[in-house]
Length: 376
Image (cartoon, rainbow, N blue to C red; front, side, top):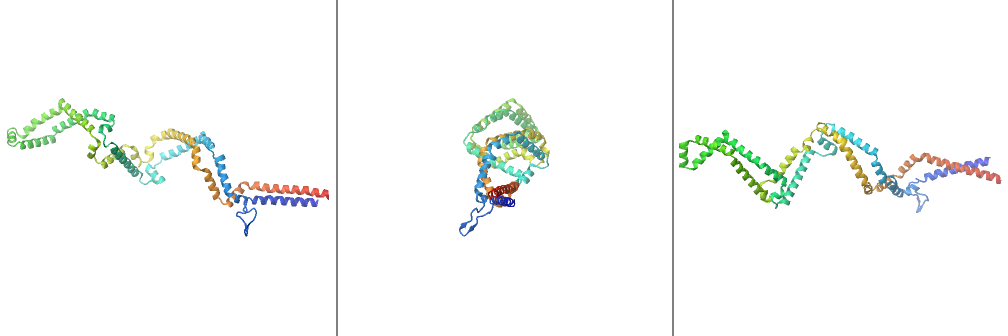
């Protein structure tokens, strides 16, 4: 019995130590050991020796079996994922739209764009200037009627009668006003002076004031006359027709590029809301858009984004090179870190393997002891 017990103990010790040593040899020694030019066998350990190969295999495993386009696509298309993204965006958007921050402050503090309104105006001016220069360069030899849209030409022609009426009414108002009467009197004086003796005779017989009083009502009648209206209308129409026949290069000198660009930018700044609301708190003007953004824009945008991402997911993963990322990350791990990581996960299992080795060694020792006892 002592012999059998001794054999069991020796077998258990040998089995346990052998398995424990085998586990440690997975990681240790961390580096190659040499005696002179002779490399000690089994150095370094298995994992340090195969570190690069392990990194490559892990990269391939992640791409081929874990983060596949098919698996990620199913996850992206799931209702739970879409609902979660929509809910998160709605919550964050609601917080932002109800805050007292302005668009400018958000761009400055969170994105780092200084003076965003000025930057936007500068970009607008640059865009308008380039567009204007390109327009002039492309259409310099074209007639105005070939450049202006037909609908705009029709609107101009439709407004000629109203322009005619406006001109005549303004002329009539001016002639009837005290200022107009004074200007008319000065003009009559100047006219009579230019006529010399004849002018002096007319002034002497009629008097300047009486002549103004006679001419003023006649001018008013002239402005009210349908014939005058028709004449001015025809003159304006003729001038518009002549203007349309001119080339851009013929009238280019009439305006200054900087003034045109500045005028367009000022109109855009005053008419487009984005410029005026940039400095206002979001809570002041975004309320009327909250329902639209939360319940319509965000869900539709998420659906479009998910569909687009799912369609091009395989291409994106290929360009992302996940296998290279995993390989590089594993290669940067020290062997000590890998050992710690593996042991933290499988420490209990490794202990069970050691105990199993001891149990198997003890069993073999028991069998050997019985055999020796029987033979002896």
